[in-house]
Amino acid sequence: MPDALRNARETIASRGIDGAILGHVGDGNYHAVFMLDAKDEADIERAKAVNAEIVRYALERGGTCTGEHGVGFGKKEHLEAEHGDSIPFMRKLKNMADPNGIMNPGKLF
Image 1 (cartoon, rainbow, N blue to C red):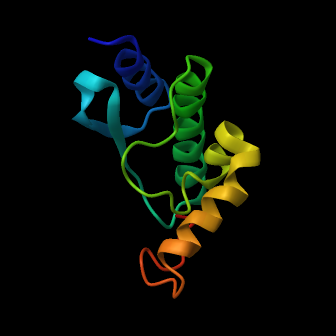
Image 2 (image 1 turned 180 degrees about the vertical axis):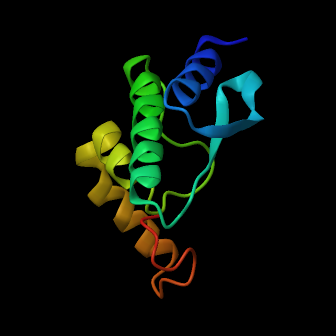
Image 3 (image 1 turned 120 degrees about the horizontal axis):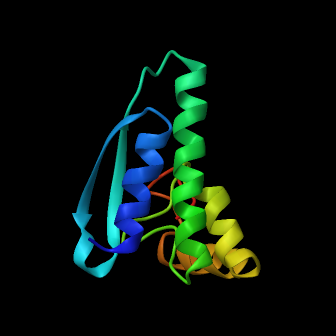
C-alpha cells in the first residue's frame, strides 16, 4: 500500500470519520470521500480538518492537492497554498478558453 494511501486511511480513522478511498491509486491520485451529517457543523469541521491533513501530507512530499479534475470550492485554499502566484495566470487561461463562464460555472477552474 503506498504511503500516501496508508496515511489517508490512518488520518480518516484517527478522527472517527467513516470514509472511503477510491480512484487511480497506483499513480497516487486518489479521492477520499467522507460520510457525515451535513447539518452537523462539528462533523463538517472534522471532515475539513481530515481533508486538510491529507492534502498537507501530499504537498509536503511534492504532490498536489488535485488531479485531473477542476478545482471548485473544497480545494481552493489548498490550490492557493500549492501554486499561489500562478493562480492569476491560471484564471486568465480559463477566461480565454471560457469567456462566458459556462464551463464549471461558479468554480475556480
